[in-house]
Length: 247
Ligand code: FPP
Image (cartoon, rainbow, N blue to C red; front, side, top):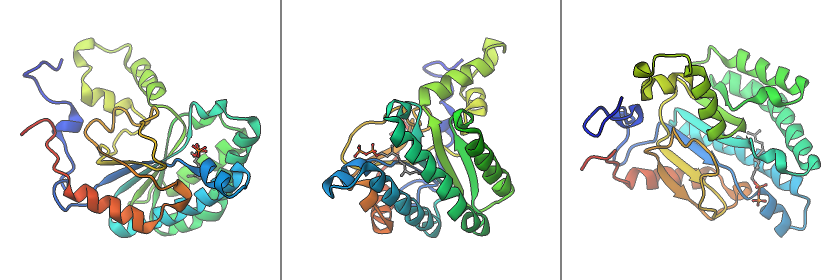
């Protein structure tokens, strides 16, 4: 058990080796927000915002690779997004299908390993099959990692982790043990968490993994975010002083 004088949680004990002034974050996580407002401002249907949002996903994943970011996590569909109108949910699922069809070849060719966090098995069977196929196809890749949040919610992830550990000796349950049963098992902690569109909330995203993350809230709507904005975010991260609870 961790006491006041005991060991620090794993995320604090193992800050990114590259973290610190002027360094590139190893793991960047993004809450892609503002697609609906982008569309509304143009008198377009919400799906047009999501469609443009996919283009941004493409641009930002390429930019992340060229910046040397090891892991990029994108929050595409939260466990709370089921509350949206059926038509919008169906549009989002359609766009995900389209993204896998159109972008998997490039991701595979570039050595990107795909991972999913969240329980994507709740999706339609054909989409589950496509996602599983994409995960299998890129599983052996050793370049950067693209993590997509699908039916993801941090509290749900922690509940599933607690269930996975429930039969164990309580004395053996520590931060490291919990990390082995989280969806992000084996990934480095989040160094930089970005939310677009001017909202200042974490919305049930990576609550464990972002324990020591630098938070960056930008006003840009996700469809207007791009390589320059990502570069600026990485520069801003490099100017932050990370202390992990120390002095
Ligand atoms: C938030 O904007 C965005 C979403 C809920 C969906 C994000 C999904 C994509 C960009 C496409 C799928 C992604 C991948 C990786 C294939 P919002 O609709 O909440 O915008 P608003 O707050 O302005 O209404």
